Image (tube, rainbow, N blue to C red; front, side, top):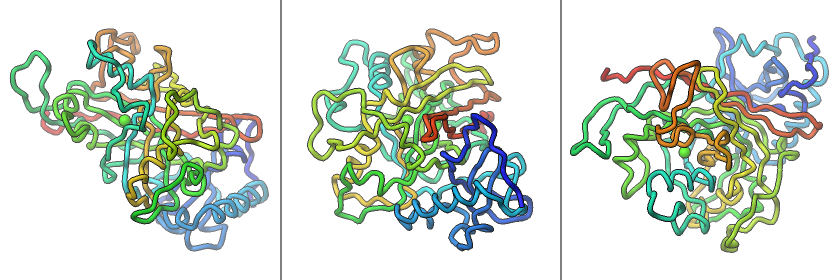
Length: 392
Ligand code: CA
């Protein structure tokens, strides 16, 4: 038997216990829980076949009472002696996409981000569009290209047309960017015609992951009018391998920064679902930003209510992301287009002046939040490296 040692200050202590899907050489992917620097095999320890499956979906579909029960059992299990063959060093396992992603929607919930992009792209107009403070603006993304952290990102090719060019050309994106976001995973869905109230959020949403919404700004700028982002976003979206259960985020809950005007009744919150989560963005190993999630204007409970208010189905495995997290300060901006002010104010990365991503660049997002034990819990990381475009 093994007693897992949890070092003081570990972001993966007993108050976190995020779920993921892992495999060891020669074995099939299955569900595990991260504790300190170990992964505990739930298929081997909880005596339930549902954890022997290659995604969390079937477990998530069982609903909140079951999530709470399993979380209690996992806590008891990992705090005691665990069978040796059910404990693996995280460095020796392969981590897989934890969720079979059903639908994917990306919001735009940071007032600072939306205002910055408004100033960049419409300098002579109001930074926010008239709808922005009345509803959480979003678009449907491509679920099939959500990939797990560590997956290389091939530079997308497409049509690009700079403002000073007469006609578009085809080639690899010249303005490849990141967006640091938080993603929410739906555990139990809602039927066609049904809408989900804001106070049902914790019964419906299983947990949260880190998201890097890779964005080809030149492809996006040319294609997005009038129907919104498409190929400038759909080539890849990276997520962290650990799903932090909502139950682990109780100590991170904070009021929203404030909504004026008051939203329509279906968007009003009866409980606080702002979240005090601090992100760190690293570009080739150098910290370039610390986006604060607590600054987000719209809450994830409001986003889910909005997603379903028209009667659209939600499903187990749906992923919806917050949109780029940007705070009021320059060092709190979660995309390079904002950090470099559309390329006009380069960042110095390891001694070089840089604006957008070059081939070989690596980006890592991490995040931590207050935990219920008084310490801080971690989300792990979402990491990606840029490979050259296929067309050269
Ligand atoms: Ca986004």
